[in-house]
Image: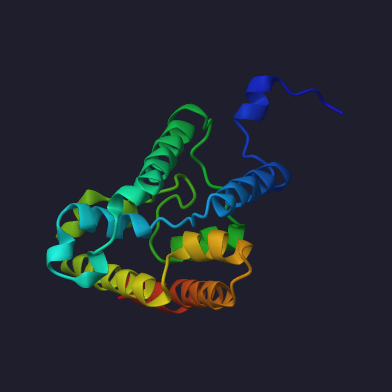
Length: 193
């Protein structure tokens, strides 16, 4: 068995048997404290803080009781930035060769060379009317779906499923079905047009 240095271990993705129990521990602590986790709830909190309660009863909540979730979200963003900036040796994404070939057929240059391909995430893409329309429709659908489902993917998939909530199971099945439909049906139509 080969010996790994501490730095080699730090720069590798954590295996499921370490990350999984850490997530479970966080969920147990939140459940014990009477809290539930979800990123989309922060948007409601921010809208309430900005005066949204003047326009809708949905925003009439005690936002001060939700500051822990805002702090958690800031930590998630900073943690992601820190991990990417200082703990990532290689930006390449380990993609299946058939996925790489499919993306190349759709016009991607060097698929898998980075997590945010410029073909999708370039600021210059916003000037394209087709991209702008897709962003507006996609944003509306995500916002509507989050509100209609009573939470986002992280809230249902992590918090809801760990609490054995049947509505969260149904929502997660819907998220995966929608994601598969988008990638296999709509994504090629959008990129080939």
